[in-house]
Length: 291
Image (cartoon, rainbow, N blue to C red; front, side, top):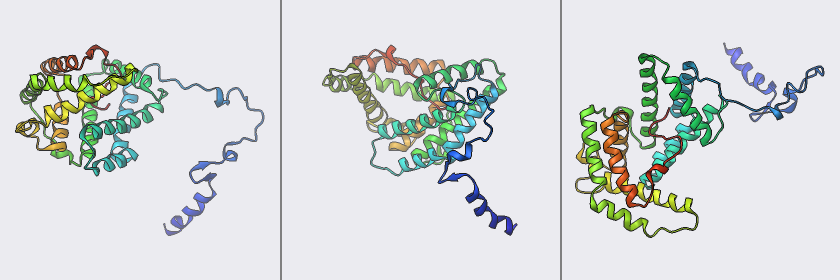
């Protein structure tokens, strides 16, 4: 055993690598009879699978979870958790950025493009895949998504996963009703109107993005964390950023419930209208919880 250990450094030095980079010679071939057209990667175009299978989807989910738990994604999330002065909205956005980069990295290995189009196509392929599997397999995928989401949020906000409560459907509906009620409160809508009315930009996309930022800020700091007591404390999730993070995680377990969706939609339509935005303009891969 000891001789094997001593041989490892020499073996590594003799491999055709230099500081993690392959040398051109390492991949050169002495066989000039090879068909250059077949091996010309300059013209190679990657393609996603024609049909995403359950094995592929399961592998993508587990690989994403692995990076969130052990990889560079985990390092970045821990770094975010140590920035106690960062606004909650900014931290949440950066957390989602970490997840997106991780998922793009994973699905890129399956041929999906590393952009919004690739994420959207993967989400569509995954939905089609899940429609074909039995309830047991669907539950397995839900568990992987749920665990990944909880680990992502817990790491970013300095929580232990077991600190995040599990809500019954009745309790989750009650929480969402309270959230929706605060969203459509006249004072909340007036605050949105007042702040967004001051935003003007010749670039429509920039103006919309700035209004989105105002909405997120008011939703987090006024709807969830404002008032006495704040909604996160009233509903038993604790204080501040960690209370908000725990509430979001617990509620994500019930995101498919029709009544919760109805409450959320009622509130979102009102606040988007107050900001002068069209809620039907929402687009993109959507990220309530990681795949």
